[in-house]
Length: 130
Image (cartoon, rainbow, N blue to C red; front, side, top):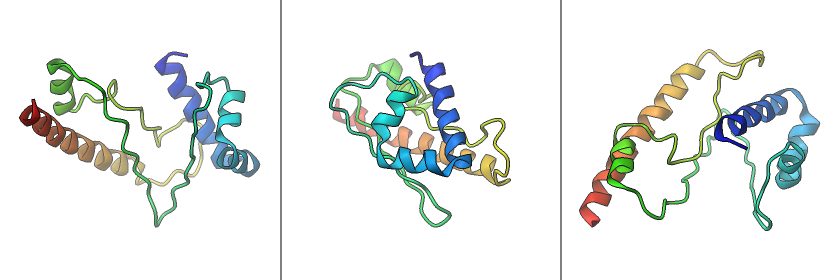
């Protein structure tokens, strides 16, 4: 499954979680089974933990550090072009999902700005190490 199809499928799963409480409960209880049933080809033995945000709690996942990045990839990270280097964050603007709060665009902008800032700091640190 290519990245675009995977992102689209993840958006569909997210939208379904918002509209189908039983599906969300199943995803929280057994994410590997649900994702496999939704067409994801997962490596054997992979463990997945699904967490649910609330208005008072937001989870932020630190992706696995890439084993080696080229100078071009490091420059892309510093420039905010991080999509190919870290897993895609599901969009908060999935079409067809009613009732999304009007602050979603602001939240996405804040998260993107924070990621760019932290990626620039990471780039600076990695350049000092090498």
